[in-house]
Image (cartoon, rainbow, N blue to C red; front, side):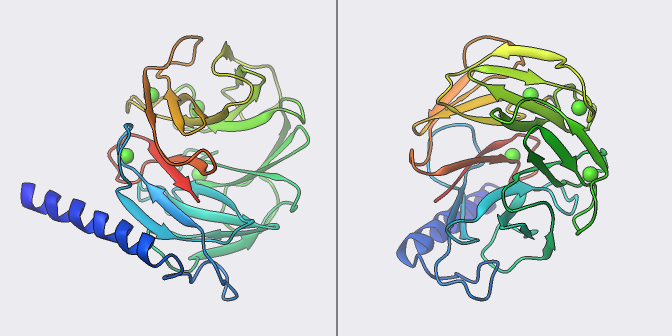
Length: 261
Ligand SMILES: [Ca+2]
Ligand SMILES: [Ca+2]
Ligand SMILES: [Ca+2]
Ligand SMILES: [Ca+2]
């Protein structure tokens, strides 16, 4: 068992080394016209350290996203290019497994399990209107509602542990979370981080409840409660110029960081 863990860690380290040595290798991003690819660095722990998994996916200019597109319990990459979504079911370099169009190029893409079936699917936020779809395919929104202000930062999480992801917004340093995919007031409000921080959301302790985090420079400040208070965990990961993302890369029930460079 230990040997296999060591082997896996070694292989992961090799993968990262290979990635660093040959940055254009595996650049078969989502598009056949790919000439340069973005590097993804996933870590399985909420602590500072090296990436456990590294690969290339997508192109500069794409909006990187993550989700469990096939319900296997592992979050994997996607990119939104214009209004085309390119989703991949494994954390390796390669082409998209699922491609469809949804929303407009100017929308803010979001991802969540809106119906509790274990599969993450797309949503877009346009102004203050949220358009959620329950399928990874082109088509109309299954649920449309208003929440927040156009200037808010939209976030998504399962704030009450019922298996359904619902909306939130961060306005300045105030987080407004709602437990329903419908128009209405926030169910939970609290202050966390600073207005210039980049908000992230995850289940950092495996209790089934998503809670806040912020990334400031390359320091991640994670909190295990949806309330005002200090960070329960903080660590450095990635570069300040990276795009921070969060997912469960190893199906252990804990969400941990990734950066896309
Ligand atoms: Ca779903
Ligand atoms: Ca929920
Ligand atoms: Ca939690
Ligand atoms: Ca995990």
